[in-house]
Image (cartoon, rainbow over all chains, first blue to last red; front, side):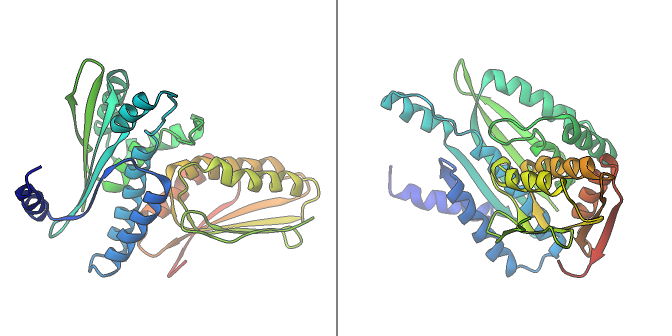
Length: 186
Length: 127
């Protein structure tokens, strides 16, 4: 990499008002640290406690979504490296004058992408009251997966942020897409 | 029967389940990646408590944050309490939320809509 690129990355992050960013494999310890850092940063901000709580809550769900994508079971070392690369994710937390943005990026299987799109479209088609009922329905009737996920994350993010979930799925190859998500909290 | 006391951590709440007083409290934050492991001993404790409960059981939920993995486990805990209600004990739930924290107030309403136990939603200045 050209050294000058470091400056380019810096300038891009400056323009985008990035408070915190990370690219790599999202582990439980990393989440603990990132959440702690964000809480400390927000302590010094003038936003209302209500907004800070929303940002924290949405951040927890977004980051735990990324965390739950890590499932490396393959025995073969080269294959494991490839999988880890695939499981590696990006997140950026940005603060504009009057709103926050949480952006994430991660690889998904194309099959999973179809399901994800359906779910996100369904959520984006709902108003506040419909989201509340949908949340209650999934909460009451859904079961936890082995990973402890409840299928409620995206619904919760939509409810708490109060905004539509902006997303895009980019073609990577025949089997994989890259999932970009932007959540605005104001 | 032994009380269940767990100190809170960065991702788990303080648990104070007092069998002699019939008072159960969850306080702090509940945001572990996988909540099942954390909530299992709590549910097991309620099973044992249900065998010889106090005539009144009061449950105080004072959470600052909880994630969606915990939300399912909290519902399961309420369902356990529903199961022992009327069998030697009257269970009531108090759901606390901080001033202006509409999200936590709504979360209380979600449970209130699902659970058939006396369920109070109480606004306080600070949890």
